[in-house]
Every structure is written in C-alpha cells, then in structure tokens.
Amino acid sequence: MNHPENHDQYKGLTVNAGIEQPASVNPYFKRIPRKTLRPVSDYVEGILKGDITMLSQAVTLVESMRQDHQQVAQEVIEKCLPYSGNSVRVGISGVPGAGKSTSIDVFGLHILERSAGKLAVLAIDPSSERSKGSILGDKTRMEQLSVHPDSFIRPSPSAGSLGGVARKTRETIILCEAAGFDKIFVETVGVGQSETAVHSMVDFFLLIQLAGTGDELQGIKRGIMEMADGIVINKADGSNIDKAKLAAAQFSNALHLFPAPESGWTPQVLTYSGFYNIGVKEIWDMIYRYIEFVKGNGYFELRRNQQSKYWMYESINDQLRESFYNNPLIEGLLPDMEQQVLQRNQTSFVVARKLLDAYFEQMRSVENR
Ligand code: GDP
Image (tube, rainbow, N blue to C red):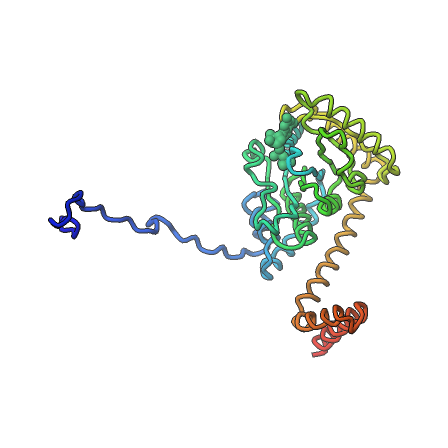
C-alpha cells in the first residue's frame, strides 16, 4: 500500500490499508422534529382517556418556563379540574437514606395489589435547582413500580423556586387525577421547607424516620413532627428491631406533648421494614383508617379547601414577586437602591416604598396607554 511510512527508510511494521471510516453521524438517525404544540383539546381528551403519553406531554408543558407552553398548560389544567380531586393524596418525607424509594416501591405495589386503581408518584426536590435535573422520583430508584402498568412516576420539576416547583407538582396532581390516578404519592427530602409545601397538597403526611442514635428526636424539627399524620420507623429488621421499637416509643411520647391536631386524629407511630416488606400492610391500614375518619368528621373537605385557598394566595404572591423583580425598570433601579441602604443613605423601608411606587406608577402608565 502506498503509505509514506511503508517507505524503505522506515523499518517498522507495515501499515495496512485501513477500512473506510464510517460517517460520524449514524445514517439511520432521523432528526426528530421539535414537538409542535397540540391543541388544548388533544391533551384534555388524551388525559381523560388515561393516555400516559399525553399526560406526560401535558406535565412537560406544566413544567415548562415558556410562555406559550404555560398558556396551553393552564387551559389544560382548567379543563381537567372538574375531573380531579377523586383520589387519596399521601405525602412521604424522610431524610436521604431513610428508605423512601425502597419504601415507595413496596408501598406502591402493596396498594395496587390491595385495590383496583392507579398510582402516580410525584416529587418535590428542593435541591434539583442546584443539581440541574432531579434524581428524586427517578424511575430507576423504584424498580418494580416503574414497570407496573398502573403506575406513573414523574421526577421533581427542576426549575424555579421551591414555591414554583411545588406549584407545578400540585398542578400535575390535577392532571394525574383527571387521567384516572386515584392514589397519589408526593415524595420529598426531609430538609425543612419542602415538607410544608408537600403538606399543603396532601391528605395524609407520612414521615419516615430511622432509629439508631438513641437521640432520634434531636435532629428533627418540631414543626415537621407536628405536620405528620403518621410517623413510621423504617429498617425495623435484623438487629435493628429493638432500636426501632425504642425510637417508636420516644416519638409516641413526644407526639403526646403536642397540641391535639385539628383533624381530631391522633398521629400514630409504627415500625416497619421496607426492604423485607414487614409491617407495610399496617401502615396502609392506618392511612385508610385516617381517610375514613377525616371523611367522616368533615376534616378531609376542610383540609382540601384550606389547601386550595393556600395555593390561591401562593400563586398570587409568586406572580406578583416575579412581575416585580423581572420588571426592567425595577431591575435597573435595584442595584443603586441597594447601595443606598448599605451606605445608610436611606432606610430599607423608604427604599422599598420607593421601588414599589415606581413599579405601580409604571403599571398604571402602561394601563392608561
Ligand atoms: P432514600 O434516599 O430515602 O430514597 O433511601 P433508599 O430507599 O435509597 O434507601 C437507602 C438505603 O437503605 C439503601 O441502601 C436501602 O437498601 C436501605 N434500606 C431501605 N429500606 C430498608 C429496610 O427496610 N431495611 C434495611 N435494613 N435497609 C433498608
């Protein structure tokens, strides 16, 4: 072969003729056209038929920051609203490693076997904003559920503030319910504020705890315990059983010191093992007992109404804040105003007032135009 290195002056190996190099782009690759927005009615009809692809696409629109996506999403939500609400919504929280994904896999299979219906697993992950892409609710973490025909697993929306992310999850609940999902899990990492967000959209708030240190109650915030309708101590298996029982007793005692919850329900503490599927049935017996109890005394309706009200105000607050901070006039004024405060030329309150006046003034002039 006529290759420069096959010349006599080189004593090394002979260079063979190579093969023709394949193209760097797969010739069978077809460029997938960018999905065009469908009419609102397509999404709504698909969702009401229980079409998972349509549901997923609609959820993607709910999560999108694009104005045109949001507009379609909001219309879809509005049309689905009359078909929503008919479900049991359970919030599941616990620190990383508490066993949430293992447990949700087992809980999910248990309730799908126990009664007909469909389960959606959603998530609120406050860290997803930082990590750019959420792991919480990731399908691979729930091996059995993820391949179950009656389940729908959706990771946490990843963009925006906790309030924004939570709002999207709440909107996704509406779509899932309209698609016939009558059991909804909302998972969150137990790190503080995200529990409040989850608590504000579920009927039952389940807190997963671990035994071990003997000071179980130390690290856990009182506010979070007060939100719990049930506390479950996971990993009650092997040599851990006694420790789990002790932890359960400590939690029970601590709960008695709190004021009686508005629901009239006494939060219960149970031990279980998600891994070995021990005590899982009892947890679901407890949750169903609770639902029956609060449906009987009217608290179920009351809590849902309170939540709707909460989300109305959250939505207003969010949108006002966004409109204010994204306003170009305010964006231009803010750095200087901040300096004024830092240099003590003006007080925080005066500066805040001035900025708000400037904002409202501009809003009015836009309106009068
Ligand atoms: P998450 O971070 O809260 O979702 O927790 P994972 O479900 O990923 O579980 C964390 C670790 O605890 C994994 O290594 C699991 O195998 C283990 N684990 C989960 N549930 C149990 C259980 O009931 N018993 C025992 N011994 N280990 C468990």
